[in-house]
Length: 359
Image 1 (cartoon, helix red, strand yellow):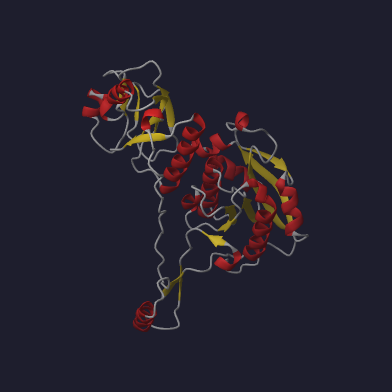
Image 2 (tube, rainbow, N blue to C red):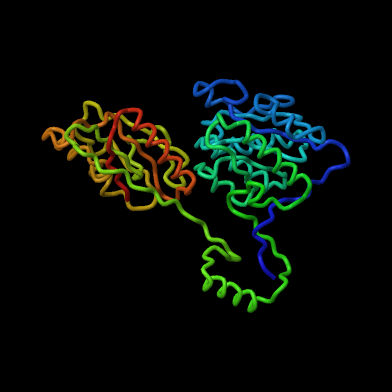
């Protein structure tokens, strides 16, 4: 026996009639609003909406988008029960296929789409998501089918075309492969191999000796290689930010940052503060003993030393907020999303460098 890495398509179980499709979108693409509606709860609209109308055209007369389920990005990616509620709304339509996205490289939207695809697969609902291969939520999809989309919303047209093509493949019960745009983790299926293990092992060794570095029966995950930014030429003119995955929050954890498997990050003000007083802050990180960090919060967020550097002119200005999450058990997808969102937030604020403290 061997594991089949290539096929992730499954035959849909329906009669000779129309293939019933439910489409999932975020608040922006259903026309509900932007960030002002990011906290909106799950809801359902009959028929195709927004880009779903074009998707319906591309799918053709054998498919019918019977409903569009939507949710705000903050709610879908940050509230533990949201994905289950979204899936329940979709399931009430008895879909043959749940199509999700495209999410492009959007962090919160991508995370919600990936989690919905994984939850649907676990529930036995046929689902297919679309997102860019660099979307930080991709890993959360597990082995649920995902097809590559463009990087940005301006590539909506070709992204919908790719989603429609892949949907037809999945609906036909055929294997969705890299040629169809399949990305993410491949579903492993036990199949009978044409050759015994010893023969296949020798073939793999010969392929490796022949220069083929990619051939394998068990692909391993490939982690990002991030190119470091060039050094700041003159810190004396730069705004420097403090960021941490050490879980340091105001005493009482008013915003309920998770101690493990964090799904979000927070910000807290530093303007007008020269120190973080013992008893006023504490670390909620669940992966190490926080006794010494709580006794002196500067062990996690070194505000005291940063203020000294600012006073000496070694740095131009300390950013007025520090950014924080808890890195304990955080998924690769969430960590990638946090990094992208931190970089975007700091770039927008004018910060040119950051000091990241970890545990």
